[in-house]
Length: 523
Image 1 (cartoon, one colour):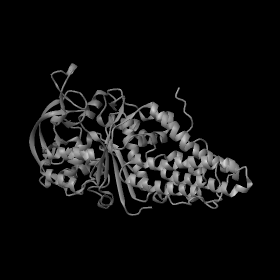
Image 2 (cartoon, rainbow, N blue to C red; image 1 turned 90 degrees about the vertical axis):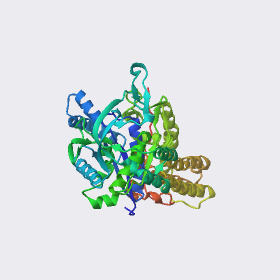
Image 3 (cartoon, rainbow, N blue to C red; image 1 turned 60 degrees about the vertical axis):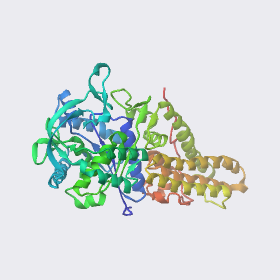
Image 4 (tube, rainbow, N blue to C red; image 1 turned 60 degrees about the horizontal axis):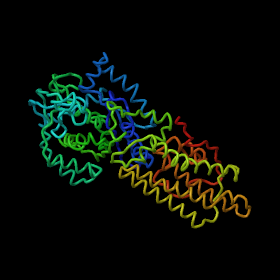
């Protein structure tokens, strides 16, 4: 179903030593919804996620647990990260692990290319390093410790003491790319989004770039520097390269040409790596820079950024066990303006579930199907002569479909859902105003009853298609209940044509529909 337009999109690769919390889930479902949308719209879509398994933090965690680093990451990925994708109904095309041979070999090839092109040199380095961030900290992220860490320099993000490291390292000539990066941001204003993130990146690069240490020699859990096996490649360089190695960089030029460049969706705390270091590395290698980097905000719980160490980490399964995966996806993608920080609370989730999903969308679907069963023996009636009210619904559907597609193009799933929800609200109002239960009492108005119920059912067909990237499970149930599977699989319906009126065929059979969003017991 490809229209030839490539849409390659990635999540960051996650540290498996962190247990998945709703912040990780938020990024994953946002990228999945964008990928599903483009896939169903006919674009040549590829979604990548994965795990970042090297570095000092992983080495120390494995040692603390009495196993090898490889055994440790294998266990974490199998027990925590693969199940996360299943829990949240994520339909990724690939899952890359940085310990896979396909990645390690291609990373060495890339770094060797930078070395051969003269962008890497040997030097000495002394700086404060945060093991939690796996990063030599810039001045702006170093603060004075308090309490037990008084007198020490600590990481502004982790609030843990920094380590002073002095090593012989290899450096990447990042400083040479300052002008080219500023030119990129100027010529491609959408390269970094949202605008607040773009402004931060431009300000950072304008303040001057220092060369980047790209190897470590104090430990050996990492990918060896190809020309010097006493060094391993700095974990962030290794990690960033996953986006290229996963789609055939270095070994499958056809696949790489088809997929690359990518869109990256990242948390704003890792924006600089993706919007500064990564495009500079690609420029140095003579490759295209990414198509764009979108930085979303943080999820806050009780006013604090999600964190296991501060006990604000909520596992996605705690939510899906109560409300289901569709409600999880809908809530996080609609309740938070994508690109800004957002607050999570159980009360807000519960209220939105009840109002928007159970009473709004779910009830609309249930009563429409039930009335077709009751008044037309379960057969979708034809539409007779239409009124202004019916045509208003048709316009609402067409406008919503167009607005939702434009919002998804802007990486704003929240705005897309708002647009789609105008159909839910309009149809609920339409049924209330047209009172099909009253029309059913008058045989002389049977044609009008058929028109009203066809309009409601056809509106639901459009909703099923438009909402399927957001809520794949509920929309699939609705699709079957409407008898729309006669049109083919829901996932094969061309999404950019969803707003074209008249897709649902009169004469098809509806099937009983259990509540899409049953009442939940939170006791």
